[in-house]
Amino acid sequence: NAGVTQTPKFRILKIGQSMTLQCTQDMNHNYMYWYRQDPGMGLKLIYYSVGAGITDKGEVPNGYNVSRSTTEDFPLRLELAAPSQTSVYFCASSPLGNEQFFGPGTRLTVL
Amino acid sequence: AQSVTQLGSHVSVSEGALVLLRCNYSSSVPPYLFWYVQYPNQGLQLLLKYTSAATLVKGINGFEAEFKKSETSFHLTKPSAHMSDAAEYFCAVSKGTYKYIFGTGTRLKVLA
Image (cartoon, rainbow over all chains, first blue to last red; front, side, top):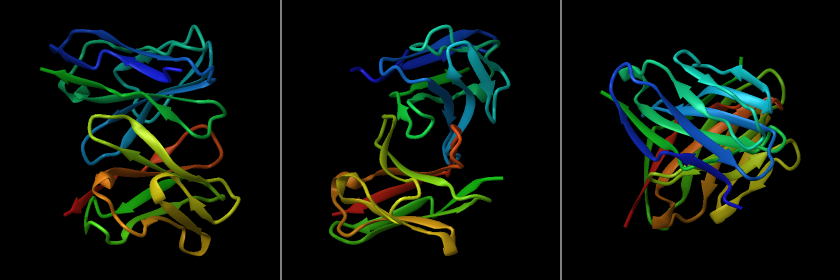
């Protein structure tokens, strides 16, 4: 099993550009999550999904969108990138909404 | 509302010394509690979890944590630090739902 994979690993965006962060898991987990990690701030939940076709907002959803058309994939869309979205983004999945398995992260810089 | 407080954003210990990383939580119901470790440029990896079974929980790499309801604490310990333990450690709480609240993290430095 590859576990949770994320692409790209690094990306630099200009202000106002858009992009999609990809997340795929091969463990057949129902629950999937997107977090952002900023220095000294821990992890903040952006969006989560409890199954294909079902998504909901977390603590910091503004400026982001998600979709969940399959169990495996949970892409995160950034529209109109802003410097405040410079962060490290982690995707995670969970079989029962308990222990979470994390991907390696995407480091995004918005200039 | 749930919250998690990790005391000390940076902790330094000598190799072979006791590691103690502190975590206090607030929750109106018995929570699920977790410790994760993050090595540089990697994702988070589960160290151990408390889910209302034994109050002393043993995890990977020689770490353990004790759930103390009276103190609302879930401190992480390891008897003897190793250089490879240098990393950032996160405490997290869940009320049995599928959403976590993470602490702000403690960066552990191990001195030779």
